[in-house]
Length: 348
Image 1: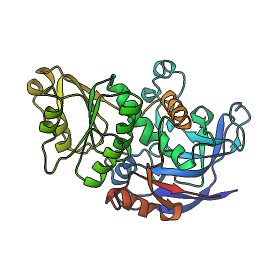
Image 2: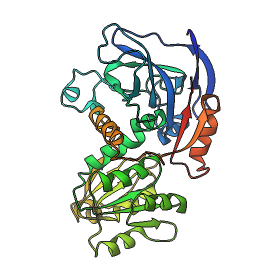
Image 3: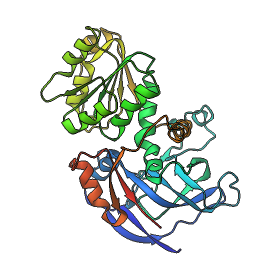
């Protein structure tokens, strides 16, 4: 077990290369994970294209990771070799004020797997034991992988938006995160109505299957007018944008009601211009940012899925082997077959 395959980014804007690299050595507090599934996230496309910077080159991408503990450091107590695991991709110090107050996504020594340090698009990955969670047998590896971002970041967005029972929630972008936000808003947060907005009818049909009260194709209809009609003129209590494009954010702003919250999750490369009085000040709108999620939220989601309260059976729509990872990126970027999540699978 000296060498392994890893999908690494060597130059911004280029395809990943399948390299032979050494299997990582682990320290006393680490776990070597035999990777069985890694989700491909839109963030990975942003890292590859330079929209968001990576810390080093070459780098192994991939931050949605599940697998088996192949080796554990001698100080690791709660994880044993052979345990099924999923990964919380934030590497944090545990000592700073933020870590000590359960806000490790603000850690002063924050590092993200697959962006700042090598990630899980490889046969093995080294992970600090504090970022490892056990994965029950009832949850397939592919679902365990996407729990690490596609589901947990959507969950964090709903928590940051303070969604309350009975409120109206508008979700912009029914992709990997948006589809889970629809389901979570209804089943876990008990929202009164969820309105899904996208440009693709296939994604909107999925949102309907997941329980969305109304779906809006923003090409043919004005989302704000639809939301206004459904709410009797009050507009939405919470609007969550998973797209990040300027036009989507501007349309999302128009859907926020008085005292409402606009939650921004999607990463975009262009500036957004707004009129503060007509948007934020005039209706006391709150603008909320979302960056990652918390380990405690991932633990809660594992519980929800294993208990059957959250259904991920339709979440993984495409699967590719590690050697064909660039095809997985193409499927997601070009929206081939209306993907929700593309997962790189490795059966060993």
